[in-house]
Amino acid sequence: MQIWGKGYPDLMITCDNGQPLADPTPAGQMYATVEGLLKEFVPLFRTDFIHFGGDEVESLNCWAASPKVQAFAQSMGYGNNMDAVRNYFETT
Image (cartoon, rainbow, N blue to C red):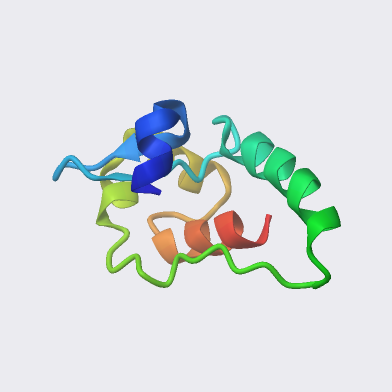
C-alpha cells in the first residue's frame, strides 16, 4: 500500500508514524480503484482466487485513530472494532 500511497494518496489514510494505510471507508476511492483493477486482471488469470495481502498489517491503530474510520465504524454498528472494519474491507 505504501507504493499506492505515493501515486494515489487519496486512497490512503496517513498514520501518526507517517506510513500510509488503505482507506477502508466506502466514501473513498479505494473500492472503485480495486474494482477497476480486478476488471483488468480477471481475464488475464485462470484462477478464482486473488490474494490482496493484509496479513502484513501488524496493527490497526492507524484506523482506530482516524476520525474518518471511527465514524464509518460507528455508522456500521462496529463500535471501535477495527477487526470488523478490516473484515468489511477485505470482503466487500
